[in-house]
Length: 135
Image (tube, helix red, strand yellow):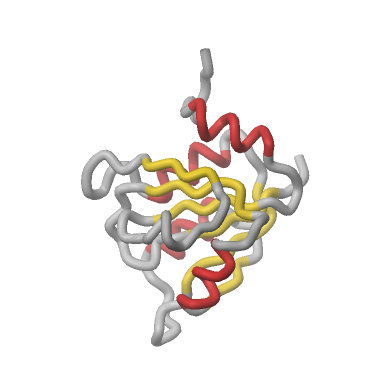
C-alpha cells in the first residue's frame, strides 16, 4: 500500500523509472496530451473541471521527486499567467525557461519525456515540463 502525498500507482511506477535529466509533463485540461507527446506514459487524472489542478499534482510529485528545472509556455504578449507565481513558489530554486507554444509542444514530444499527466486544470498556460534532478 502506498502512503504519503503521492499514492497513484501508475505515476509512482513511472517516476521510479525516471533518472536524472528525464522529464515529466503536468498539463492543464485543454492540453492535447495524445497529440503533443510522443512515447510518454499518459495518465489522465481530470475528474471534473478544476479537479485536480496542475499545482495539486505538482505538490504531490514534489513529495517523492526532485526537479531541477522547468519549462513553461510563454504567452503571446510575454506576460506571466497567474499560475506562474504558484510554480515559482513550489519550485523556488529551479530555473524556468519560457517557450513559445510551438517550442513547448516540440519539447513535450522529445524522447526524454517519460510521463505526461492530464489534469482538470482550467487556468490558462498552466502546463509545466519538469526535468528530474538528482536525489
